[in-house]
Length: 201
Image 1 (cartoon, rainbow, N blue to C red):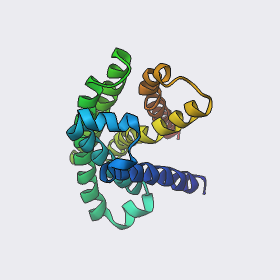
Image 2 (spheres, one colour):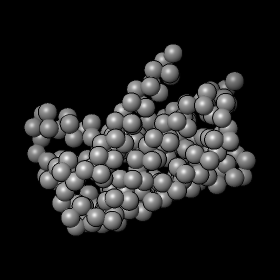
Image 3 (cartoon, rainbow, N blue to C red):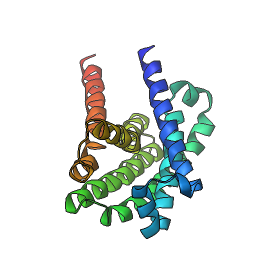
């Protein structure tokens, strides 16, 4: 029951952020000044990043549902291919955006490394399943989706920073790291804990 509730909460958050991205793509008047500035200077990159991230976020939530994987394995495989493509598009565009991101070198490195890790973990996951290593594939996909969910954690931290009135200019470089590094650490803890239980069984 606990895992199911966790998945439901994650899916709701993922769909909410994906919807927010779609609205920004489709409705220019909806964009806040910060997003509008990015669209002004890098319209292609931000569009590709939002679209790729949106698709990856929705598909990833579906793919993590074990009942769906079991019942619809062929659909799971095709959605997986679309997910990989979406991450490549969103990640490459994200790296381009990182090179000119607000906040200086710390932000450039934070978001740039996240983009590299996002694409890298996804490609490793795809390589693992192509070689028949199902458990390794699942572990790497967890890492990949943890990075996809950086879009969720980023907005949670932005909301908290606004709530506590933290200066945006000071906080944004920190945000470029904390929106994704803790996500990966949590997944690594989960994977290592499962491995320890398996080896001691």
